[in-house]
Amino acid sequence: MHRPLAALVLTCLAGAAGAAVAVEPPELLKPMAFLAGHCWKGRLADGRATDEHRFSWLYGGRALRDTHTVRKPGQPDGVGESTYYVDSAGNHLEYLYIEDSGGFSRGTVESLPEALLFPDTHYISDGEALVYRARWTRQGDKAYEAWSEAQTEHGWSTMSRMVLHRLD
Image (cartoon, rainbow, N blue to C red):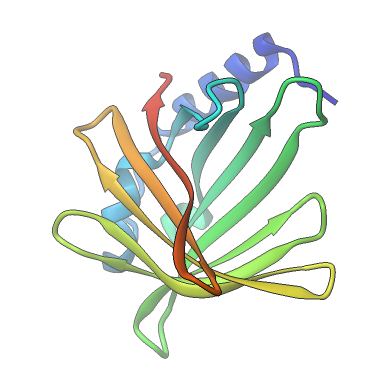
């Protein structure tokens, strides 16, 4: 079911209003703080489909939620959600991703000086696993590039590469 554009804008505005609340995230979450309280949108390689993300703090900044919607003309929307949190025993940043079709993945995030790195992990859906990895490179305060690759029998292959721009 397509959500009207007005509802998306209201959702983004509500998220931006929530950004005014002061939070002090754990040190490992701070590299992702620029995303919080904002909506981001990118266009997929086909030029028609879009991917929209809304990031918001959970639990007073102890976790970060990313809800996203992929819109493809003539197809139902794809919806997913990631929650980023600190594994204090392992002293690293982790995430859990779940999507409306039942697929999921768990992984870690490493903060590099120039990017956020999502090392190799498994996406599980319908009893099958896909090995993938991603890299998000910040482009100032209003954009970041998201690049994901999947492991194939011939090596790594780009699944998606797009620049997401801040909408608010």
